Each structure stands twice: as C-alpha cells, then as structure tokens.
Image 1 (spheres, rainbow, N blue to C red):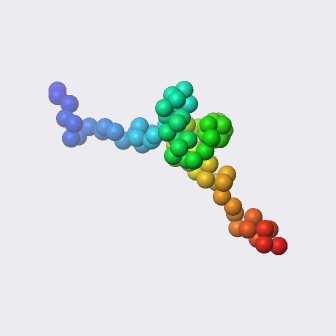
Image 2: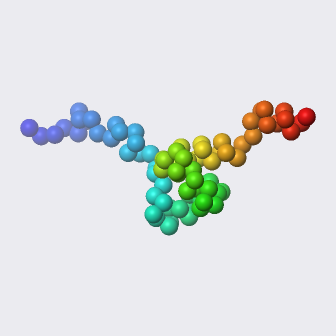
Image 3: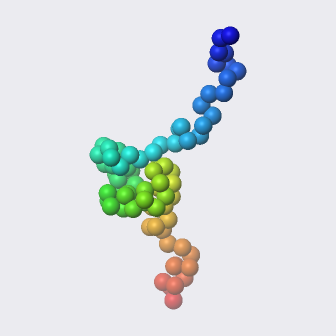
Length: 77
C-alpha cells in the first residue's frame, strides 16, 4: 500500500521547527550573540540555564536585563 502524504501525520513535532543554538558552531554563536546583543559568556550562561532553544534563551536574556515594577519602585524611593 502506498503512503498517501495527504493523510499521514508529518511535521507535527513542534520541536522540529524550533531553532536551536549549537555552541560548537562558531557561526551560530556569532549570529546569536549579534541577534541577542550579548557576549559569548552571556549566551553560554543562558544556554546552561535554560537549554539550547533560541526562544527560551531569548526570554532568559530579556528577563535578566529587564527591570521589574518592584525594581522601579525601589529606585524611585
């Protein structure tokens, strides 16, 4: 029986489309450090903390550089 591509389940794995950061690839490290405007050390720290999914790394980096409302209130005091 032939495989009918219109009825088979293909590409439903969301992780297959998730960009990942390969720390062993100098080109990727350069790209992602530019994209996130961070140093290689900051990128490595983020990957160690949350894994190599680019979206998770971005959220981690943004969170580490953003101020919370509590921080702003403390600064205003």
